[in-house]
Amino acid sequence: MSNLNDYEPVIGLEVHIELSTRSKVFCACPTTFGAPPNTQVCPVCMGLPGALPTLNRKAVEYAVRAGLALHCEIERYSAFDRKNYFYPDLPKAYQITQFDRPLCRRGWLEIETDAGKKRVGITRIHIEEDAGKLIHDGARGTLIDCNRCGVPLIEIVSEPDLRSAAETQAYLRALRAAILYTGVSDCRMNEGSMRCDVNLSVRRKGETGLGERTEMKNLNSFRFAAKAVDYEFRRQVETLESGGEIRRQTRRFDPATGKTYPMREKEDAEDYRYFPEPDLPPVILREEEIEAIRASLPEGPAARKARLAARFSLPERDAALIAGDKAAADWYEAAAEKTAYQRLAANLLIGELFRLSPSEEFSCPVPPEAMAALCDLLGAGEINSPTAKKLLGRMVRDGIDPVKTVREENLAQIRDQAALEREIRRAAAERPKCVSDFKNGKTAAAKTIVGAVMKNTGGRADSAILAELTERILRSPEII
Image (cartoon, rainbow, N blue to C red; front, side):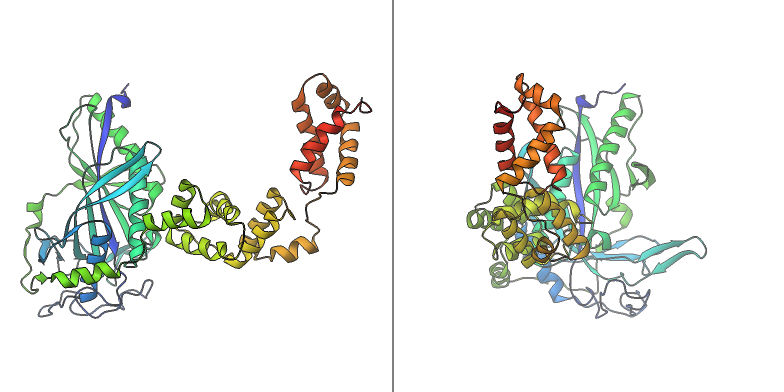
């Protein structure tokens, strides 16, 4: 039996991010997601003879913005190359990319896990064009949609600095947050505008060399990336422990089985026969152009975390969780501006709405004004926490108005001590053993009485008043 604790994975990521330009990188075709198949194509992106590419200036600007956000050095001179390979979704049989002269180099990204903070190196960021998409149809066979051909991408290549599934997931989340704040991509993993290739090898702990690696292609979920790392690490260790060898392969991850499967032997650079793209001049950037882009960068995740923590008196961890998703941070700030109970808004966002959000990308149908109204009700003591959570779930599902619902359904918190005392005495009379246990020193028995009152009042009793009254009544001599 292999001992996983004797080994560590060595992980590097290649993340492809689709840039949100209105047109493709080398032609004027639109980039609208979800358009009917093969309706956003032209001779250039289809690679027809005689068609010449023209570089999209906005794609270069967006790539520089991403590079600056990731602390990269921006190259004043970069160039394009042809990466040759035949595949059905690549009509011209080569991809225009950047090989030995990428636009950005030597950056870094800070991540945080339960083990602490860590800086992950960014080797390079380069511009390239996307390929098309194969659609496997059981009745009609394999179909090709070329709409995505020529859509501008940046590929962000990390150093092999990651050592676990948790670090992999933290890196992807931090990277997505950093890119979202720049505005250069929507990073919608479910739509393919952020995709990840995981390169993984294993070695015994304490060693410094690198083992043979495999590459897991096109992972479009943080969770799937983490599961793929866990499985592939275990598979490689078991292979080595049983006397086998790791083959350099491209593999795919199957979410249904949680396993990786070989697709093909991994290509080397020479297999692609790179050569300079003859139809595109080099990209030459002036210092003032780079500095103008740097000056235009908006607030990033780290700065926003610090501002949220200071402005709304949030714990650092809560501020980090909120700032880590730009949509969530925008939504939270809009809600927090309209209530005096900003901490409650943060707690409900982190504890409830993140859980209720249907995907890894935050989306919330509840208007910030409605959340502020709910926090006002809870903060003022008009409702208690269980009621607030139930109301929030209904607000997400049905769009209810919390103030109107509390009034119409009589959900206000019961704080009247006389009313609560009657309920406590009734619950105690029905549970003489709990009373006896309490008087014999088993103070936890009071929780049973509290629970019964909560049930009888539909969860509307003020928990603090109820707990204090229950103990006082159970200690009184008339309760036997």
